[in-house]
Length: 272
Image 1 (tube, rainbow, N blue to C red):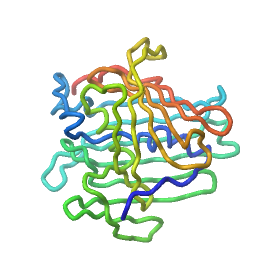
Image 2 (image 1 turned 45 degrees about the vertical axis):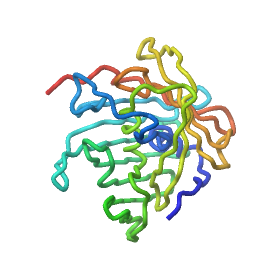
Image 3 (image 1 turned 90 degrees about the horizontal axis):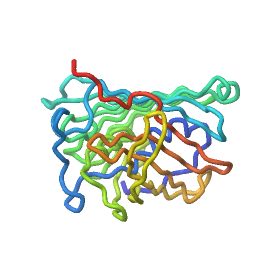
Image 4 (image 1 turned 120 degrees about the vertical axis):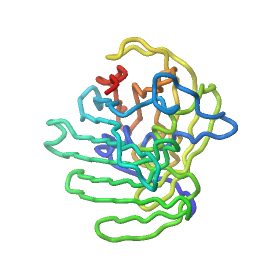
């Protein structure tokens, strides 16, 4: 199955999109971008560890639209491989919930070393829309088993494909990012494979609830038309250090912009 453009969405879905789908544009390590760096003080060479938890406020036109939380926990080994559980939840604010409630949950269990997904479960609750997805990846066969609303299909997937959660963490594992560099990644979502592009735009300092930090500004090229301007492009600001913490994310919509801002969890979690 070949990769294809994303289809248009609706504004409320951005509450989850900014934290989950926007990070589809993160890239896999390859020769052009070198190998994952060694990060002392964190397990295996990963710039994150079990116990990490980030909380974001989602705003639109200076109105709080919702909250999203991402966290990492240990998981039971799969196929003899150590695993991690990556969980993202997104809920609309009381104001938005009056006309369009959002309560989404995405859980991905990944190989703790390769960061490729074993299984992803997506529980979507947006307004009157209810969907449940479960994807099991068989990377050695180039296949994925997808169950959506009780219907199961087997689909072909490209080698090294990520889901909408695992790609964020794969990106954070990369070494230094050079402005002007670009890359693509294959991501599976909702029974389709998407090919997305990421471009490193530059380095800049940002001030927010986390204080003042140096960040790498990354542009996610999401080539579809509809609710987004600029062909759906989304910008993500990652700290320019070993942790690669996504401190802010921003997407233009038909009216204004939707912004996700990190408000809690910047500090490194204490060792158990």
